[in-house]
Length: 83
Length: 269
Image (spheres, each protein chain N blue to C red):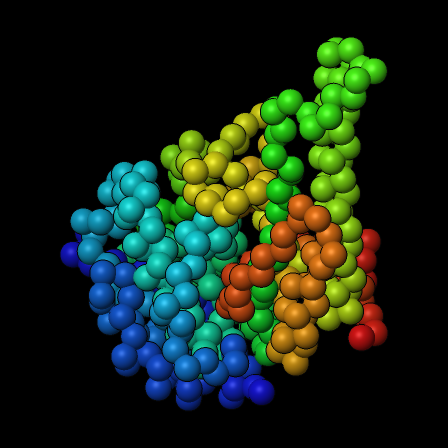
């Protein structure tokens, strides 16, 4: 089942009743996502504001801990792997 | 500074489906979402809506980001737009609060990144992201007196034995979690096209019970999506003290940025 643009499968609605946990959303919205360069008003990526301000909420972030949301995608599938 | 700024949600393939979705879309603050096109970038668009400068100019934004309620409302609005777009086209979600002075700034960004975005959109077409979290639920700290101290044990030795048992059961659940992780990896090896690791979830916002020991995202071709989810959900089967949670399907947030140029591996230029 493919949609014209090859996006997500057609869903009846964006599932409004499914409340997504904020933390799962922040994992994706703060650390990931493309950076569209240009005349950005302010770049979260550069300033890491949210990492600082939410430190207490998200838990111990400090020496030795990997910084939150600083992870990037890692290719995992071996090239040419068979299914 | 103009009264409004341009908040960009995602870059997407320019499809007819997208143009049908967008007229009804509302973004941050309920503002209408529009598609911005740039000369020389005919195959892609950026989805944008106006936001008040009073809230999104540098200092204001800096302050707002300290406010979790504000952050949550923007994050949910951002996500709703990305979800709606993703139903009609391949998308590259942008980071939260990607804000430009005007649409010309967005266009400039599109032109600069045209090739990168175009390549990435091709790679992500017909893929979805699944979140996979593994939790351990260590057995309750049994600080209550052990069931049978054993008549031949001194209190001290009984205590040590109890502690030993606790330690074993803790080790057991972590071992079981490792086993579950292997099963997830096995499913991913056969079915997924990529993995991104997120930091394990801790702190006040981590509301799910247990201790989160893995928080990963997998990029999965649509045709394997259901099977992948089913196999991952089975990863904790027969294991005690381990829970696997699957979230999604997500737009490919965790894979929007191209992978770091992988050092040795193949992966063409």
